[in-house]
Image (cartoon, rainbow, N blue to C red; front, side):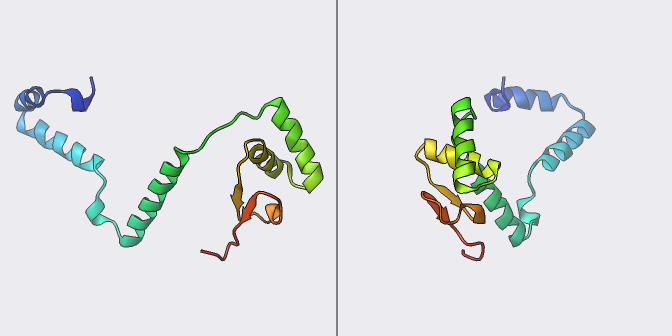
Amino acid sequence: MRLGEVPREHVKALIDRLADEQVQALWIILESMVWPLEEISPEEAAELAEARAQIEAMHQTRIVPLDFRLSLAATETSIRWKLPLADAVVYATAQAHQAQVITSDSHFEGLPSVLFVSKGAS
């Protein structure tokens, strides 16, 4: 049973059985588990928002296995475009799935289906 599924009356009955010191200890534990939003700086809040956005973006990501066919394509891509093997895996995977690579890695600059973003651009 999850915490949200426990009836409030049941939780209240459990708390009523605790001694005052136990209730205080429980309150301190629960307070320490809550993110202190009022105590973070605007810069930290911005970093937190960016991290949350990146996590949300990851939920839209599709993970594909690096199988034998894709490994061969990456090897051919590495030779053809003179890419390091890790970059060739990324590029061959994107090509196999008709996806665009968006990067600021200079190894990809000028390749078809790549959106190259300069590191100085915003």
